[in-house]
Image (cartoon, rainbow, N blue to C red; front, side, top):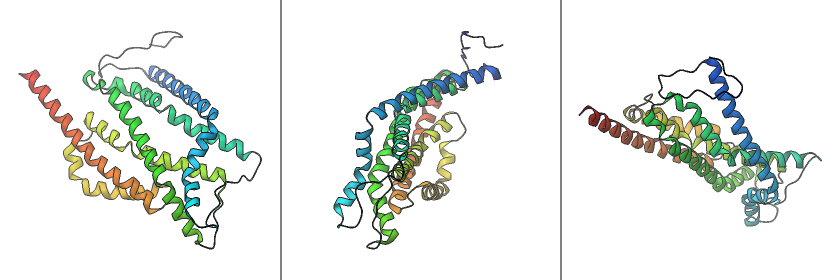
Length: 268
């Protein structure tokens, strides 16, 4: 069946219903467009409030410089070219726009994968979106909280007492953006594990059997993806991910028991 302009998108009532390739592509396009519109709106909002946002992002560095002896670092950033200010504003607005649009993005992701789920599993839409947004925000908070320690580590390793830190604004914003993105995406780890258990790809027993390997992999990943490379940020990322791993196992066990009880009730 071909999609016509203005025609209603087919409704799938069960996972056994199927969509054609053209219908899948049409659905994907509409979801991407809606997500992009939300990002553009978020970019505009952040651009309007750019100065307060920039001061907020620079606060960990300013506080670090204020707490150190004179000559340790320079609190003010510098720009190397006339276009760097504009590119920095666009970068901050883009990062902020994506964060503000995250609820819409996650909702569109969920709505795209919903046809593959059973009716009972579709009710988890709100918990999925809410937990994804909250965990990403928590990751951003942890990244921001460890930022001053990361900067201090990097400055000390560049030559404490010899090198005076004076950061380029675009480089600083790039580091902060990468830190928040790395922590935010990594904190989505339990959502992925719970979802895989929900659809039957993984089981709590499988995750529990491989907990030693999982912890080792978590620490290796944390060491690799931490942009600053400092031990404080690495531990700030690896420890919560380890806790999330075991929490996802507990949630999986709860889902498993509920599903078994529901099946027993239907059979009885």
